[in-house]
Amino acid sequence: MSITLAYTLDPPAGITAPAPPKDEHSFAISPGAGRSNTEAYYAAASTALKSAQVQANEVFTAWKDAVGDAEKHKENVGNVGKGQGKAAQIYMAR
Image (cartoon, one colour):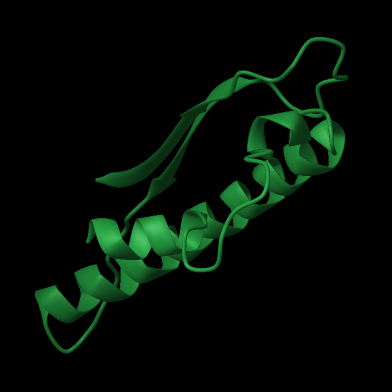
């Protein structure tokens, strides 16, 4: 058993890639000894999940730094009235 982190990014042209834009990483879940099989499994799964999170943070931070403001124009929504921004739209969509 393992946890798999797979991603495909579509960076803007002209960006020097800090890592492959498409990749997959697997993190094994290897239960050891515990008070029960369930406890051993969840302890091992927690460790694998933390490793996947660290890997994702490293990769995506490197990409975020490489892209910088190159895609900032995609976020420009003009002047937005109070309570009509992205956060409000997301909140209201729930």
